[in-house]
Image (cartoon, rainbow, N blue to C red; front, side):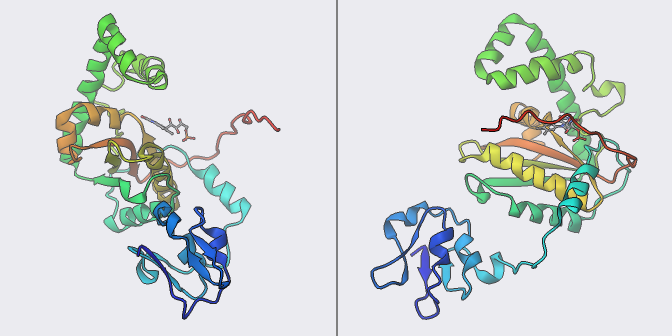
Length: 292
Ligand SMILES: Cc1cc2nc3c(=O)[nH]c(=O)nc-3n(C[C@H](O)[C@H](O)[C@H](O)COP(=O)(O)O)c2cc1C
């Protein structure tokens, strides 16, 4: 059985029946909390049932109260502190030449385990790169990739093939966003600049099996959590959309980053200690809201 209720300890509060998103728990004819076997297959191991059970009477295969759960503090962050935390975060692209301790990187990755997911948290893999030699090698390959992309997008046949093979969203990003900078040599390392990884101290790459359910959305949420966790450590971070397409198209890059053949890179984050401190933040225009 994947899910079990210990009938000896269950206090019949029925909170599990209320919180399970898939209604796997039910009140049976004997007025006891029980499992609806027909629904068991829906379990995504979100852990809501185990997290709410006062008597720790529910067990799910693969999850343990000791290893996968911890008690919550009563107090939550207040709105002012939360907004202040968000407002203080900027995308940081200038870093000190200072290594990030592995323990901090591990804490950042641990924080991503609280992210919601649409597929399974086990679908996502994270590669952490701190090795400067590898970063230098990969930067050159990425720079070449973006040089080639300019050539392809300027060639009518190659451009047509790209357009046919990517979504409109990706095509527009390529032509409106990346091409104008790439054709001016912005991503080219020959200028001596690194405008892709920005000489960051560490690069995080989130990748997943190409067919894994919801892995694209999950990876973007995961990287966002990592970015916010980095900010809480006083680190600077920027989500970098330029890295994954290069990894997925250039075999040598995939090899250098040790991404399994069957996986695709989805999103990346550069990290480091910020060189500069901002004095103020930007007030962006209000979002357009449609109240119904
Ligand atoms: C999906 C995504 C992809 C991004 N890709 C890049 C990138 O390749 N290079 C870069 O310098 N910034 C990248 N950014 C960072 C944005 O440029 C940045 O969030 C934006 O300029 C707003 O600045 P702020 O984060 O400081 O508020 C990306 C952000 C997101 C969400």
